[in-house]
Amino acid sequence: MATHRCNIFMLAFVLCGLTCVFVREELVIRPLHSGDIYASFQFRTLWDTDFLRGISHYRLFPKSLGQVISKFSVRELHISFTQGYWRTMQWGQPFLPSPPGAELWVWFQDTVTDVDGAWKELTNVLSGIFCASLNFIDSTNTVQPSASFKPLGLGNVTDQRFLRYAVLPREIVCTENLTPWKKLLPCGSKAGLAVLMKSEKLFHSSFHSQALHFRPVCQDWKCKSTVLELRQTLNVVFDLHTSGQGKREWSLFKMFSRTLTEACPLASSSKVYVDVTDNPQGELFELSPTTPLLSQVVVLGDRRTYSVYDLTNQATFGQTRSLNMLLRWRAAENMLRPLLHGERYVAGYGLQTGEIHTLMYNNHPYRAFPVLLLDTVPWYLRLYIHTLTVTSKGRDNKPSYIHYQPSKDRLRPHLLEMLVQLPPNSVTEVTVQFERALLKWTEYTPDPNHGFYVGSSVISALVPSVVAMDTNSTRECPLFSSFFPCKEESSYFMRVYTEPLLVNLPTPDFSMPYNVICLTCTVVAVGYGSLYNLLTRTFQVEEPSPGLAKRLANIIRRLRGVPLL
Image 1: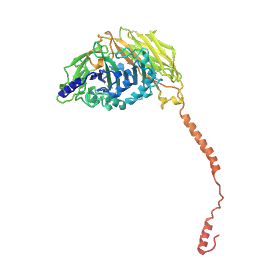
Image 2: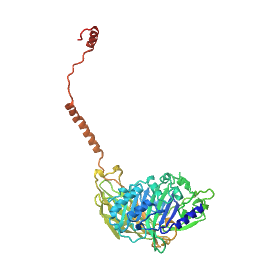
Image 3: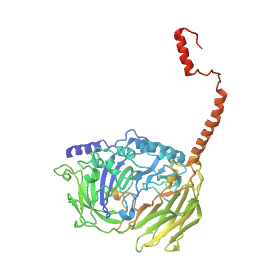
Image 4: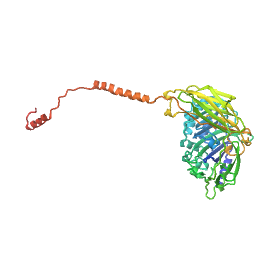
């Protein structure tokens, strides 16, 4: 197997030429303090090519996606499908955050003249690729942020005219979305870490999120040339009670009903990381089989220690040629609060007015830092922007930057962005009142009494780091620690999503049309039916039939040959 892998790598380097493709895959397992377990898959494909020059062979890069990127002149593309809500206070911060439902944001090349037209066609094409409802993205749920969602890759395109952002909070994620996502992987789901992605196990979890990110990045530390990066991520949290049967004991087979037997033959690196930072002496949980490889990585402003299993090394699988890691808890530990956290809810009573409350928690004991809040509200919730208030510790907190774009009925949503300074160890509350609109009866969903969803608020911030961050993005490091670019050693970038809102709107009595139809049909059937029957019926005079005695007498007279009566 090792000889076969070496031959594949040598052949790849020989045939590489000007369009090299490199593949890496990783799985990170993090035991959570709640007894749940967090598994994060990362697959990265680097391609040294230029879509604008035309491509005849896509090699390991998925052709279906490459043609879309080339046709619509996409510079960056970020799409995610999430089922469930990430519980930050119980699970900590995820490696890659995502809101419930479907999220899509795209940076187009500056050569695109009709951005709205390209955006509309792109959403329809992506809807077909991922078997999702992205075709429901239109002008009523698309915004153009002015400060949020800056490019994550390399490039000088910062003109917000080429940025589009949309979210579908009600999108349901299922196997139909996972299957095409797996087909984009270089090895599919036949080899490597992707063999663990069993649908019935992944969707029987508390949280499931699959994402795809495309962007240009530097090829080396001098950044004289760029390469295209395609990163596919899948995050899942298995519940202690539903998936673990209430036992604080996890293994690969218990989580995925499968074990690892080989790495992806096309991958230059295939590793499994297990977070053992809080378990230096094995007092919290027992990990088997043990590995001598340890790696220290700075993740989310903290230095973490991981046990590393290298799947390209056949000694990792042992004599059974199978890797099935086992984590067995010995004790419980209290969890530290995350530095940044957000919540959102709707207040008020009745179906006329209401109030949106957004809470932002800064749990740092002595450091204040600014955050950028993005709110997208549908047009049928008419905001009273003069009622906007921002308070921290009972005092007014004036934002240093506010950008507000009012909505237009049935054309575009509200867009609110503000830069707020969060004091240390505080809760900052943002409130705004709104009025519910009365929709046309054809604009209601099939289940209007369920309510209407409002997308999550997006909180972006540079959070103070406990340790010095690495600003060299080209250095060889695990994939889960190198997604967001870092330009300062003293802070790191973090994005937090709040809960989506479920708002009830004034709903008419949809049974009235049925009652009117029934009453009308009854009147027509009784009134017009009787009149029509009288007008079209023909009347004939018929003699009354003879009695029984007369019929018997006629029978006897017929037998005797006598004329009938």
